[in-house]
Length: 459
Image: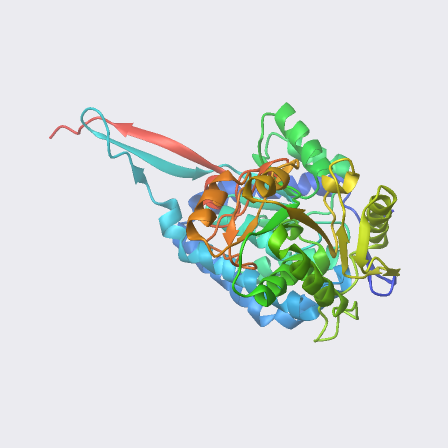
């Protein structure tokens, strides 16, 4: 029985089903990845790889309408946001192709003691397994595959079981771009098969973007087999409001940061921490903003909030909200459900004794807190097991710098949201994971930084 099926979350209709690979197919895929790495990847130049990665970017743009339709159907992303994701993915591939020579250049050791030379020369590691989630089906793949193909690694990509159509489309794009077979492969694996691939001595490393549970399981297998692992996991990002000259624009930013992708983003602002002097006005305006966003058909151009990705995801969020209310929290607006559509919801009154205080709410639910001052805000904001991103709104530049230093997170955005870009590294600390994606740091994750030390050559 297949684990890979497209079930349209807007309608509940099963649209397509794909078979999980047989064990023989898994072994053939790993062998092809190893052969492709030892052949074309090792012998190609960064410029040759970059030319094909540029073509991958072009094909994303040429096929953007078709690609967007696939993920609207697979996971309910509003169509305009789906188009934006395809475009951003193309930009990511272009970024790594544009910087291929820079990424792969030797790095001389300038303060060398003694005569001769010493450089750090980068070499690929080999086949890599990527385990990717459903919430950004193209973007998540681009930020893993782009830098690693530029480095000369080959890719085995296990996508989320509910995204087999978009996963197949990405493989087709790499083949259509001109990559030899084995450089990029879509592999539909069971969890047991994924564990076997991680343990395979031909596979050099694994990257997973997903839940804490998935990351912990993968890291345990990777560690047991002494494999390099990168983890991009969950988040419960704080949104701090200390001062503002334009509360309406802050509320607009807050709503966008919480509701993008139907609230299903690991780096979405989820906890809104507001000083007492602004709290009530902010809360009133956020309630008004959320009340004005109604769930609707994600295929419609004007859709801002579509369905959650699946019945299981909706059940989970509904249970978390109900439990929060049972434990004493208050729903200020929303909280209702219709199928997989969940209303934009604002909750207050959450205390450290409640589960919702430290849980990640993966959907359109904002928790708003009132604090007395900066110290209380930061104590509350840091008092979670996550440390992915954060948002700071203030008119005081010194405060912004001070707070940025004190936040336990991998990313801090000051007076802006939605500012992700291909050149900016993405990642977190604590239970939000290890390693970085995007930016030049991503190209350092799965590469052999080889020291080459030579004595002075004699004439």
